[in-house]
Image 1 (cartoon, rainbow, N blue to C red):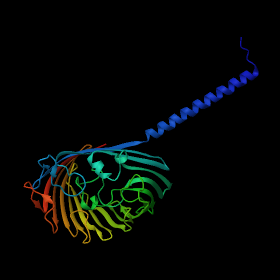
Image 2 (cartoon, rainbow, N blue to C red):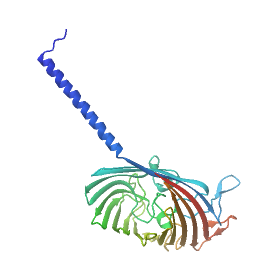
Image 3 (cartoon, helix red, strand yellow):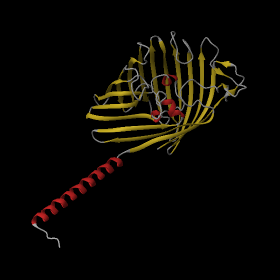
Image 4 (cartoon, one colour):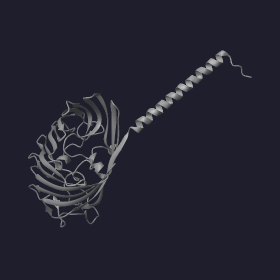
Length: 369
């Protein structure tokens, strides 16, 4: 028979108290974890498209050994360049934020996503953005990690662009940066950003031991916004020449139905680079339908070009309709690219003859969630 002494009872009380405290701590931890998980927001998009050329090659031509010899004609800009029915990407974004801190994990799957993170290797080539941030005060936020570029009018996500295909200025500017940046809210209209980053699009780590510096000055009000962006820094291991890019992005609601955007940019690395400008007028014709135009002029520098060759100039006219049904957006798009250069034209017609212009059609479907 067990006898309970005062000491035994005291030990039992202490043991019970410890058990209750542990149970309470576990319950609080589970509640805290559940609270965090419940505040994680999931968003993203899925897109697919059909593409055909009116006056260009629409299929891959093979030689007698079955090797691809001539590819289907396409503009030398990013995304939406595959012939026939094609897939874009699946984009899943996890976002958490409390009063002081948070994170974003932005994952991409599919050809558009692979093109967007072209400088990353497996398994990191599904990471479009991955960063944490800390709100130092109401007016200062620090961000560390991999984030999409602050330059340019267009972005990687098809759900956030009016046009499905992308401009030359966007395609040959930076896509993403990895580094640290500080965003400043100066007042209700003015903002600024300063950042130190790896070479452009090297998102996993810094392979060269060189860094870029970025800056932005922004103004916004209820009618629109304007951002002046700067990027400067060495971009490769075998060159001491720094890349310099200055970029202006702006857009304004001139009426309830008419929006006008503009992007102008200049980029050079030791005389090799480009400059350009584009207008983006958009008309909201009804609650569900809008139509917009991208009129872009893209000029490559005399000392060296990145696309069609030194001193080449390109004009891109893209007319896009946007029909919205719930979370689904249907985008029919007509595009004309015309290139002025010394060599034979960069596009192939159906007889495999080079030509200096290409007209094409794209029908895209984008579902956002």
